[in-house]
Image 1 (cartoon, helix red, strand yellow):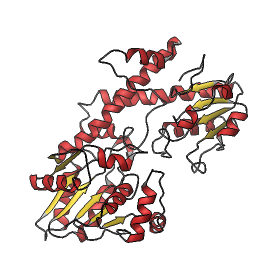
Image 2 (cartoon, rainbow, N blue to C red; image 1 turned 120 degrees about the horizontal axis):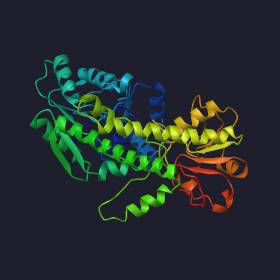
Image 3 (tube, rainbow, N blue to C red; image 1 turned 90 degrees about the vertical axis):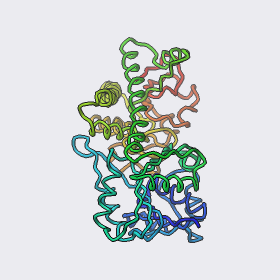
Length: 405
C-alpha cells in the first residue's frame, strides 16, 4: 500500500515534490502558510516557472490526488520543505523548520515518518526529533530522518527522479524507512546513513561548488588586473587532464550555494577558514563588477543590465548577485540604468530602474552589462551589438576587444 504524504512548504522544492508524488499515485496534502499561494494552487496554477510542474499540479488538483491546506493533515509521511534563511551574523534561522515540526505534531500517528528536506545545519534533524518527542509523548513509534534534495532549477522534476540521494535517520529504523520512501520514486541510488552525516553531505556539496566558483572569480579579478581574457586562460588551463576550473560570474546566488556554506562555517567557526574566504571573494567580485559598471555611468553613458535572475533560463531571484548589482547600480545612478529580464513579467518590487524588452535594449543606446547567462543573451547576433561597450560577467558574448568582469 502506497503511503499518504503531507508536504509542508510549497516552494521551489516542496511543490515539485508534491506534484511528482501525486503524479505517481500517492495521496498528497500540500501545506503552505500563504493564502494567496494556496488559492493559486487550488485553481491548478503555479507560482514558479519550472518545466512540467504546472501540468502536474493541474492534473493532480483536478483528480484530487493533491489537495491544498493551511495546516498539516494526517498522513503516513511528512515532508518538511520550508526556507532556512540566514539571519544576523550569517547565523542559520531555523524558525520555519521548527514551526513546521510544531504544526505537524498534532497530525502524527503511530509509525509516522517525518522527513526534513530543508537545507539545515548539522544537528537540526535531532532537534526536530527531540521536539516531536516532547510534543507527542503519547506516540512511541516516530521515525525522523533527513533527506536533502539535489536538484537544479530548470530541471527539478527530472533530477528529483534521476539523481542519487542520501537519506539519514536518527536511528537505523528511520534510515531504513526513509530509504524505502525515496525508492518509491527515485531512479538513482538512495544511500542510507545517519542524520548528521546526511546534513553535512548536503552542506559539503554546495560549499564545494562555492569554493571552486570563488577560485574562478578570483582568477577573473587577477586576469582583469593584467588585462587578460580569463575565459581563454581557464579554457587553456582546463586542457590539463587533472584540472577542471569552473566558470566565473558576478557572484553566486540561489538559496543553496550562496547560503549553505555559512551553515558549515557557523557550526564550527574555529575550523572553517576556506569557506569564509570563498564568501569574501564572492563579495569582492560583486563589488568589482559594480565599480566597473558605475564608472561607465559616471562617464555619462547609460548601462543596460542583461539579466536579474541568479542563473540562466530561470526566473529565480533568490540571493541573485545580478539583482543585487543592478539594484545598487540604479540607486547610485538614477536615470542611467535599465534592465532586461525576459523571464519576469514585471520588475521586482522596489527595483529602482525600468524593465525593458531585449529588442528595445538592442535598438537604443547604452553599454550592456551581462549579469545572467540566459540563452537568449548568448544568442544575440554579433552585428546587433558591434561597437557597443560590453561588460560580460558570464563570458557568453563573443566579440573581439570585449571588456570582461
